[in-house]
Image (cartoon, rainbow, N blue to C red):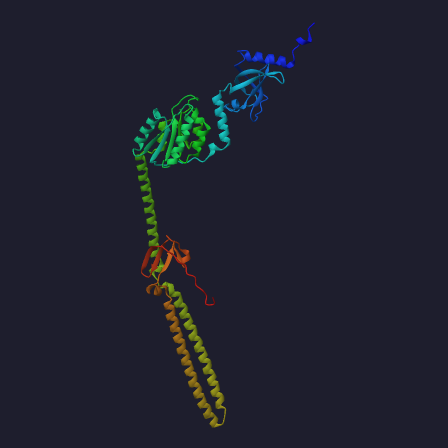
Length: 452
């Protein structure tokens, strides 16, 4: 029978098992692959499990080690974990203490790439407005390795197309752990200098690991923040980096980068000559139309027969004169009839003295009437003469011969300074021709009423 003193306590047994795990050389560093199970992101330490078809192992990963994980773990993801086996004494459970973790299957770098693309796309970094490239740049900054073929290809192509353009190299590592920091530093340096028209950033082809600095978040944000338009030339046609997605222009090769940033001067000069010819043709056409319009105005009846302007007034005046003369003659005829009637009535009166007085009075009235009629006729004639003179003075041609003119713009008469603005082209119409002028200054004067 086993004595009670030979029984182990729970703590003693757990300590024994824990020591076995600790001193076992095969359990000090193990490499385990499995599927994440019950993973929930926590602040600080992480506690989860990994499993396969037949077993489950609890995993603990402390905060300093988890901070080094370069991807976002998700439940159900297959991972590769490096760590050691230990026993959690309070519960008597054995667990895997994870020291590092990376995804299995797609590969760590590719998964990090996909997650970074998703993150930056969600922030709208790829949808920012693309800055246009200047047509004729003077200074182009290039960030690349000083010893690679990229800078030589860019310089050769750019100088062949535009010998005047300046290519300034900002040397940087393009792969390795320090490359991302150097790229960010040089992008910021180009923007601080501030007198560059374009910025080319790139390198030759390579593996995903070689191109990884151009997938770093810091590089992507530096490109997006650049005030200088960025042309990305990273890898080959089939390679796509996050720098390509953020840049204002993406090309496949360094030669293509030089081509999109520099024009061929001969082609540009030819284009300018063609544009000049088209402009001259358009201006000649406008001049022909203006001359044709001027000829039409010159041939209009108002310039050919200016008397037509007041012919209507003359006709109205003639009609009024005829009516006035007829009215006066009618009135005179009525007065004559009345006088005859008075003579007949007077003849029937017998007293001779009254007859003599009446005759004398009649003679005076007749003379007065004739005088009044003459005065009235003379007054009417004077008024008629005055009206004719006033009408003649109101003739536009009479007014214009005294130094007056009228102003028009686009065939519309200008009646107020408020209708004009600086730079307008107007026509000044005189009695003997037209002059063209340009408004340099206008001033509108306020007219106050007499009651103000």
